[in-house]
Image (cartoon, rainbow, N blue to C red; front, top):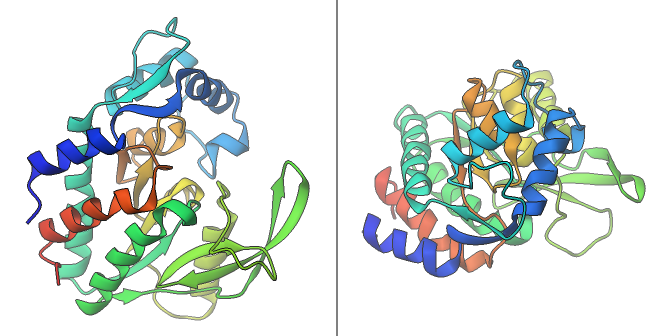
Length: 267
């Protein structure tokens, strides 16, 4: 088993936590956009509370460990590894509860180049344990607004994990914050009369979009993704794990191992 101490050392060495690549400027820009209800940053969440920038900074300091000083406007952001470990344990607890009940899970990521392996390892283990790993809306077209205009993508599943792909593209998937894919996937599952997920696991719009619709959701979030932490604070996201979501894909493998060890799903 991977010990908590060993994982903490890995988080710091890989910069998944500690001093991370996300800049303070980038995070503050996201916090201001969130307060302005910019859909590119709310990513499917309709906040219930009237959040100010100071409120968001205070929340992110509490949930991630970033500076609590709104006047601190430059440099690299910092994630407290103890907060990462604590929420990763809560993340594992929710997965373990679904696995124990033989429930159904929907996985989706807006970071396929970085996080696909992390989620796929969990999906493989849950499937082997008798859970249903859902793949609704396979091949369905989704029109996503980008800085280049509206572009068509398709929902595809890779090892049980939903990603967005441009038609004809060879890449594993594209980076996306949109909540539209999870909305379409959940509607497709309902229309087919099949099971709805007991849990949605992912990041970005997959978590916020599901939580907004009342489906339990857990996921990973960087310091410039305030929507997941606001959703957690408001009770619509079960667990938001603070970490850098854009480091090398192999750096997430110990996290998969740690979660599976804690849920007794290691193979």
